[in-house]
Amino acid sequence: ARTVTRGEDGTATVAGIPVSRLQEEFGTPAYILDEDDFRARCRAWTDAFSGADVFYAGKAFLSRAVVRWLREEGLNLDVCSGTELAVALDAGMPAERIAFHGNNKTSAEIERAVGAGVGRIVLDSYQEIVRVAHAAREAGKRQRVQIRVTVGVEAHTHEFIATAHEDQKFGLALQDGQAAEAVRRVLGLDSLELTGLHSHIGSQIFDMAGFEVSARRVVGLLRDIRDEHGVELPEIDLGGGLGIAYTSDDDPREPHEIAKALADIVTRECAAAGLTVPRLSVEPGRAIVGPTAFTLYTVGTVKELPGLRTYVSVDGGMSDNIRTALYDAEYSVALVSRVSDAEPMLTRVVGKHCESGDIVVRDAYLPSDLAPGDLIAVPATGAYCRSMANNYNHALRPPVVAVKDGAARVIVRRETEEDLLRLDVG
Ligand code: LLP
Image (cartoon, rainbow, N blue to C red; front, side, top):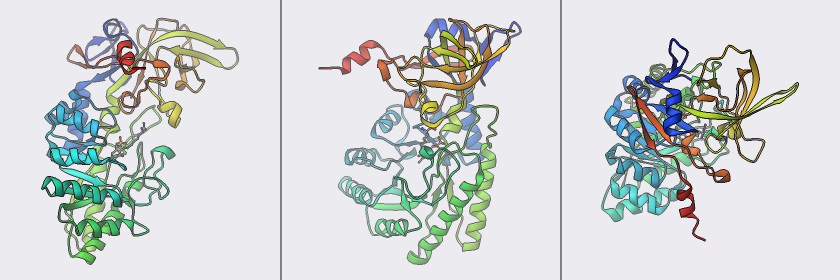
């Protein structure tokens, strides 16, 4: 695991804490999150961009502690539901540092966001323009908004997490004039202040080309808006999507590389169009929190299928990490409770759920003396694992344990049977 180091005797520790102690204290499965790593990644982004222009995407993983870290590190926050908004406000994120996303925000969510005074609502449909304008008028406010533009880029990632090709649900399309029409409508409404354009092309992307095309097309629309309406919108947001290393095959770009590439292209395109360079913001989620956590599991059974491979069953699975089943995501795994010199064997790490697609790590080598009771760690599970965790088979969602300077504390506690039974009111 990335944040796990081996002492001289081979024992695995994270932030100075032996992994076996974490198991004793918090049980498994558990997500172990390195707070210093999280903060360092926040700073890498705020160093690369201006701090004020980094919006952490809360969908990747959100909790009160995370909101406090973001606030302290000077980041903003992107939320995409009323409940994410509630967590953000509850943990003290100033409303003006919050951007509200989503392709079907309810009127209640919109009223709440406008009422709280969020700094930005990203508009995703014609109906929503009317709803946000109405809510702002009712509240006696002028709401700052951006328009989510679908730029028509095929991001090279899994189909389910690509968001800017034409045939999908997000945004207003550039090509068929819907984005330009949305601009016309918004500019005609007094209760809305159109501050800029937004484009998010997808997630887990390594190739900068998609971001560059996106930036070029967004600036092209800024130019068209200036030509048609005589206004130069002051902001563009190019979304999140930067890929991280799940296995050693992945070679992620650093925040400063992204910042430079985007700034260069925006500056060049603006110069060509005679536009003032707008303020550029981004929304990284995975790239900040993904690498900061690993999932700690206990091995339950080891089943050898002669001539095929060995199935290693752990005490979690698709309820705490659905990404392998959903996106064919790749992960690595390591034995962390002891040192083994045994020959490596080809394994598949699977969960305890009632379907054969319940795979955590599809192909992984683990020592051939692996046995029930061993602890194994799956790195890079900080993003979209706890936030997409579910209760399949009435699994109890694991805790998130933050580690820092030799101390560990629960920031999201483990779900209990009582939690689940309380919901069952039949
Ligand atoms: N901004 C917007 C408007 C988004 O829709 C997203 C992600 C982000 C920012 C953050 O993207 P990131 O930097 O984390 O790639 N559940 C999937 C990922 C879904 C991403 C949805 N939107 C997964 O586990 O891979």
